[in-house]
Image (tube, rainbow, N blue to C red):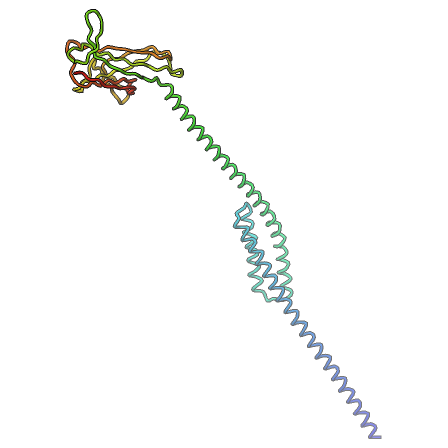
Length: 296
């Protein structure tokens, strides 16, 4: 009887111990599973945190590049970029738990919405600025080409004006001088002897010129002897800063056709000097023609 009671008690103890063992194993298994789950959650939170930091870094880089382009949105871009920088700093300092991470994701999503809108608008402004720059450059090039063309026209007009001015000048040609002995009969005899000459005959021609200005023209004749004396009237005329001492003047009516002119310079009671004489024809102070002759 006692043996049966003892066996029953032993069986009860074994059953209790078995149940306790099963309970202990179940508890250990649960604790292990919970630990693994917690560890997985920690790893996942850390991974998400790093991924979020990477996304924020990319966003900041895009903002930096957009700010360098200096559009009308630069101030707003800088303000949003600073918010991203602040979020990065806050995220780095956070404990890294799931709850705080969710808060950071919310802040990131809010910034992301503003980010997309700003970058899209900035791209539109950048393209518009590029088009305006191209138009401005094209305008500058066109203006440059027009200026070159205008400068060329100015030069051509100046050259044409000079050509016309040059072409409109009357050419003095065939200048010649003779020493003359005039007889009482009026007959003129050419001589090379200074002692026989009683006057000098100066002749020249004006060439025909259809574009020259017609009308009365005055020419100044200057005759200089071998001793550098100006013969004749010895009058002096001033033209601006220049002055001219001349022997006599001759006035011609010019009608665009060729014309010959001859004038005389008298000895005025004294013989001409021996030597070389210089004859110059001036239009005001501009020398038009010159020649020399000699008397023995």
